[in-house]
Length: 362
Image 1 (cartoon, rainbow, N blue to C red):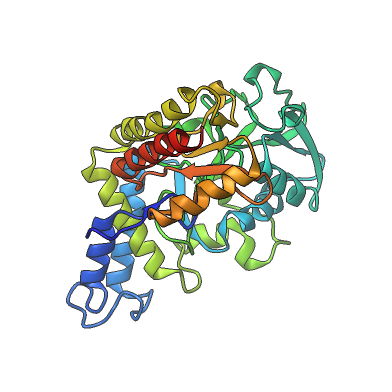
Image 2: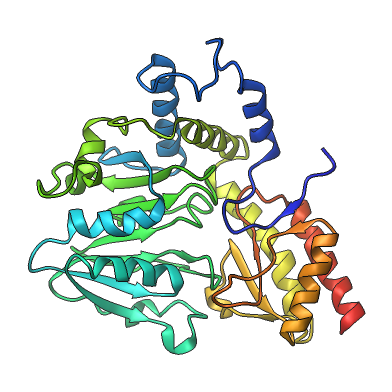
C-alpha cells in the first residue's frame, strides 16, 4: 500500500501492515471455523489455543520465568492503578512511587484511595524532563512495593536502568515501552501494560506477575478485581477481549520474525536517532524537552520557538500525511511516538520534513 499515513499517534498507535493484512485475511473465517475469531466462544478449543499461544510466545520473547503468571485483562492500565493497591497494599504497609510525570501521578493518586502512600523520588522540580537518579530513590522501610513508570508517554522520558529494591517488590507500568527492549523480568514482582502502544490494539491489558503475589488475593475485593480470579481461570473467567488477544498474538509473531526483542531495540534506536539528531543539529530551532540522559525511545518530545510556529508545523505535517505530532494537551509542544511498529521509513520522512520546515522557517 502506498497511501498509509505516517502514523506517530501516542495510542492507539501504529500496527505493522503485515499484521493488519493477516488479520484481514482471517477476519471472516479463522482457522477454517467458518466464523470470525470475534464470533466464536471463548470456551472453544480454537480460542483457548489463541489465548495460550499468545501467552507462550510472550513468555519466550520477553524471557519470563516460569514462576510468573501472564494475564490478559480488561480496563487498561488505569484499572491496574487501582487493582495493584487493592491486591498488594496491606495494612501497615506503604505504597511508594517514583514520580516521573503524568502517568506516575495517576497511579499514585489512585493508590492514595486505598492506603498510605509515599513519594520515593520525584523530578517535579525539573518539570519532569528527566528521570530521577536511582541513588535518590528513598524506599520506606515498611514499603509494600515501589512503583515506577518505565516510560512517560507525555513527557518523553524513560528509565535507562531500573532501581534495585532488595526485598521490596518492584512494580513497573510498561504501557508505552514493553517489548521495545530486553528487560530482566525477574527484577520485578509485577509488570503491566496496556497493549495499544507496542503490543496490539486497545482493549487488552497484559499483566506479568510473580505467582506468589497474585495467587491469593484478599477476600474483600470484588471478584473481577482480584488477581487470583484471573490466575485460576487463565484469564477466561469472563468473556475476554478475544479479537484484541488474537491481535496481540499476531504482533508477537511479528516481533519474533523481526529477530526478537534485542533486534527490535536496535531498530528503535536507529529510528529515533534520525529524529533526535535532527533536533540536536538544528542549532536551537528545535528544542528537545527531555534531558539527554532520560530520552525515550518511544516518545520524542520537542518544542519550537513559539506556539504559533508549532501550530504551523502540525498543520503542514498533516498535509504531508503525518498523523499524531501534536503534543499532549497537558504539556503542549510536539511529540513523535516511535513505537515498535512505526517503520524506519516514517522516521526518515519525519526527519526530512523537519529539516525542510526549518529551512523554510528558520
